[in-house]
Amino acid sequence: MLPSAMTIVMIEDDEGHGRLIEKNIRRAGINNEILSFKTGESGMSYMLANASRPAKSILLLLDLNLPDISGIDILAELKKRKETSRIPIIILTTTDDREEVSRCYDLGCNVYLTKPVAFDSFAQAVRQLGLFLTIMQVPELAK
Figure 1 (cartoon, helix red, strand yellow):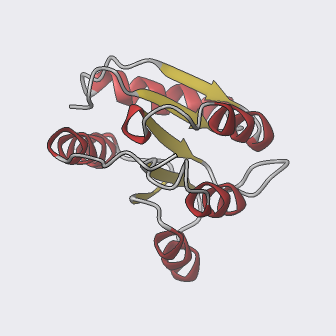
Figure 2 (tube, one colour):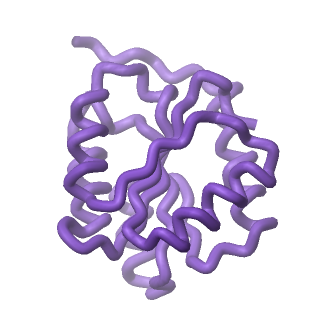
């Protein structure tokens, strides 16, 4: 399970996919707060505005195919900034291109899942990431 204080931030422009992802999160027994953003710009603004929160208090679910900003650009920007570089990021997208998958991992994503996501795969990925975050101590970054 995820740490109870962790907020799930979802940047997903497709309302149907967003509802399905949220439904699967709840089916997996995860009751954390979920904040949804339909544009990359609004989600990125939230992430940067909350950069002072401890990194392990946010889990980002990120679609790559957004109407305004590429999810890859968001991933790269968050991972290059000291204050957001440790935020765990799960990529949820329709693309299974090997080069894109590799690029996302190279940029620092924690998990890459292809939509439509099978419930079991999604629940397992979130549980494993939650277990990892629960036992791992994320060192605070020097300000």
